[in-house]
Length: 386
Ligand code: MG
Image (cartoon, rainbow, N blue to C red):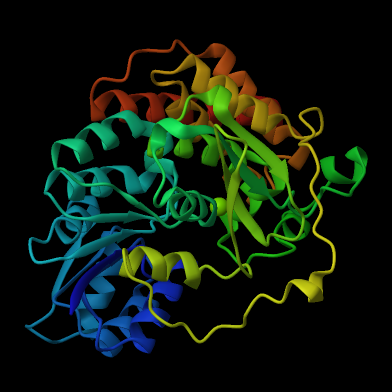
């Protein structure tokens, strides 16, 4: 029986993990859960899965939860330190990190440092501090299991192959809801329109990132660190159907890909059971139902966020952390109707132009870069709006 700690349990990935745990009660039990502030959802999960410890990053939400869960066997922790305490619980077999955004960095890195096996569903910690995450994982003799569908596909396409034989990693991108729209329509898109992803059901932050293609940019950076692949060997291809989840090209020209219907339970289950596979009762891929699979080149003119991510990776140091912090603030402003969709990339670009890039040596370097990027981006958005 694997003891699971799930960080970000009330989000979209969290729900899928718990669905797998429900389907496989002999294989998994829930040891710890953590969420940001959804105390009612967390309460329902506690009653269903009976974890030893839970944490809410928001202390007021934790207070409300304590008032309703009167069970001395369940420890209710609060604040960022409480989340980190759950993440580093010494009895876990697997920590699934699915917290949205940069907030996942501190607890995820702490889990790796504590020698816990980590499966990573949120890409932001890798974007902000991939070098530190990998150094720490190597020190622990552990490899981080990817859950992001593209990285899971790459991970699966690497099995049985030598890293030195890779010539290229090709990430697929759906193109998001605006791929076929005119520039004009896209620039004026509302949050409601941008939240309509054609293939995947995901949380709001990642859905907006998919619409700007920043999600693919962040995934390129994530892939760089996870698979130790130089930026020049990381490519993106637009694949509207989201059936081919990513590909690895080897030095002899062979290309190995992983395919499947777009359902996050498949990559989640692979990470939870690695190196085994367990039967999952999910709809199967019938290629004839698709008939045609299409592939196109990314359009950097209409989707500048992807280019900004490549540039940030090349600049290195704290630049990807700055990119990520600026993006989170810009996406938040857009979702709150405080920034037009067409200005998301401009705002991030402005922050990157102002940035002084430092070497990334410690966690504090990444957190400081993140804070600076958030402050600078917020101030810029306010100055433009007023
Ligand atoms: Mg992905």
